[in-house]
Image 1 (spheres, rainbow, N blue to C red):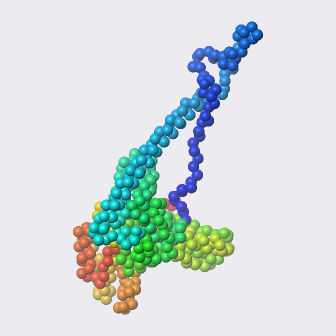
Image 2 (cartoon, helix red, strand yellow):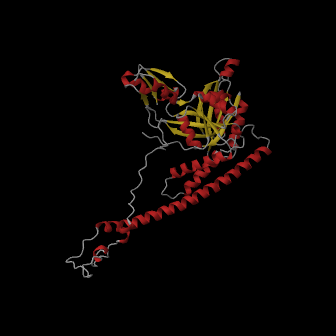
Length: 440
């Protein structure tokens, strides 16, 4: 996995002038144009008549004293600057704790509101009084970017506030985030980027079980892949969305950079382990360089790396053969959460039409056009439950649209769909995140 956090990046501190000795600090060079006085040591030498010893020439300048005379102001400046940094650090710690105290108060207000509405949670990790509100998070990030005038880059300021907000969330409530594990997967990286380091991360072996962990209250939130720019939709996630009551709360993008890892040379590799999504994204590379190697599906790319490290003539996919290879993830949780639109939202819903009725799908899609709604995504999956009950070839259609579920035109569209479709389910509304710019 391409670790974009670089926590262990080596840091070379700037050069620091050596602290001058006591004699150097007292031996300053005279101003230019003035005669050099004798050194203290020479002036103190007497002959046996207690008269000053005559000298034919002035003593040579003290090179060490001259060098230290220029270093002394620099050292003094450095010390002063460090004192200023220490003072700012003290203020920062005080302000951070002040902010954290207010954040704890916010959590208590949320909890009281939850209890008064009769929705108090049965387990701390599955609270319905949401501590993670993507709309508010985006407001904070946009605010600090507007306030930032450098020299820190906007990305650096946002990253700092990501961790501040993560720490605040953990003070309000114990938050557990389920992800497709083990640690080190792309999903784990996406979860860290979304929630910061201060929450509890729970590795889960399959995407379906991530949904289950959140449904059962073993995790507050889950993060699952929804689609990849190279390989398309993630079928396992769409299949679970058909049956779950969980809602999408947020979306996130992560650039994916796979690598082929092995202890063997390329021409000796006989088996390649990876997740099916990674195989799909790297199909061209494998067909070109390892056409005869067996491709063995495992639960995650991190597990694939563990297997390849132990076996001879084995490799793990971790080399995407497409520029701009990016995976889109979504955060899932119980309940709708914050129902306030951000002003730039998306909504994902699914529906089933009677495929025996001519034009049924066309009629369903026309509802969005009549309501003036732009669709940004259409996908489908076989409706396994309906096919088992009522015959084959029923499909669930997934549609993503611009707008929030409480927007008037979206409400009209859902009402129109309900009147003409067999099933309609809104899977969630969430603030839109700008799509990353592809890189070569």
